[in-house]
Image (cartoon, rainbow, N blue to C red):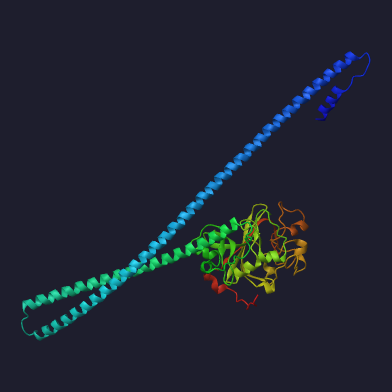
Amino acid sequence: MKLLLLLVARLTATPPPGPTEAKSRFAMLDDVRLLANGLLQLGQSLREFVHKTKGQINDIFQKLNIFDRSFYQLSVVTSEIKEEEEELKKTTNYLKANNEEIRNLSLEINSKINNILQERTQLQTKVGTLEEKLQGLSQSMVPPEQIGEISTLKDVIEAQEKTITNLLQAVQEQHDQLDNQKLKIKNLEEKLSNDNFQDTMEKSMESDPSSPDMFEYLMVNSTGKETRKSNLPSDCSELYVKGEVNSGIYVIKPNHSEPFNVYCEMTPDGGATVVQRRIDGSVDFDQTWEKYEKGFGNLERDHWLGLQKFYGIAQQGDYILRVDLEDWRDGKHWAEYRFWLDGPSTHYTIHLSQFSGDLADALANITGIQFSTKDTHQNQNCPRHYTGGWWFDSCRETNLNGRYLWLRAKGRAMRRKGIHWRPSTGPSFSLKTTKISIRPAPSTSERHILTRPLRTPG
């Protein structure tokens, strides 16, 4: 552009006087050629810019079309869910009607059985009378008519006994069927209540931008929703028992707690509640005590569930804490502990026992240790110098909430600031991904459970 302006200035300038007029005309012609060349280059640049802009506009239209298709598919899925919900309601009403019919039929059968029992008693009385007559006539010839009457009565009694037996069996089958129908109706009602509550909470979270984040407790006060709350599972393992087999975000309600969202990991062995996960470093884990107590992150990816919720689940019974790790060589490892957690008055002191796994035990030293963050620093200012909240015993030991390093750290100081598993003996690991989950301890191992000390209210 500067070249074009320079050429235009030279063309419009007044030629100098003198005998060199022919030479000046040739110089101006060269300038015209240069100007033409510049204009051609400018036109070519404009053409390329236009083509590039058209390509970008086409990309935008393609993305809009993809968004429209996705929105249409989501609308179709929503309609299907509503139709399934209506069918489920119809099925529940139908089962209730069948339940009433079966109950009336059972009452009618019981009435008939009572009548049959009365007739049986009368027949037994007649048979007793005939036996007395036979005993009186034992020394004389019994008339053929009485023998035929006795045989007929015996046949009638046997037929009545068979009928009574069949009726009793039919009544028992009806009672069993009635119990099964009641159980199915109860399960359907619970499932319908839970699904409606889950859908209500998810829709409210998606539709209202000002709704509380995923780590807030779900306060519900209306009478109808309180009933649904009472049907919510206490943890992810209970969801698995009720038939949920897909991993994802669910609402649970531990004992003495308001409902809240968790990520449930469903495997063939059962359901586990994910307490912590590190995948890609998208969430900063160098947070305050308030954040670590409440929870933060994205439940479907990197997150910390929150010490309050962690304690609310763990205080319900005996639990297993599982740690899954992946190092930068794509090696996967695991470790499990029996554990229990004290309340907020003790800064969520953790207690671990019965280690198992393919890793060296790196958490043995933290049992009986309080949780620390950069603004509480219960132990040696470790969170302040080494980032993240953890049960710090020594600043050089394991820290799964440290800084996420996208490459394997070089240098001991940098590795200490990152996510690492460092036992007192055995190999240490600089980690790419981590996951901490909890599940109820198996009932068959109750004889191995440590005797817990009495917990102070916290």
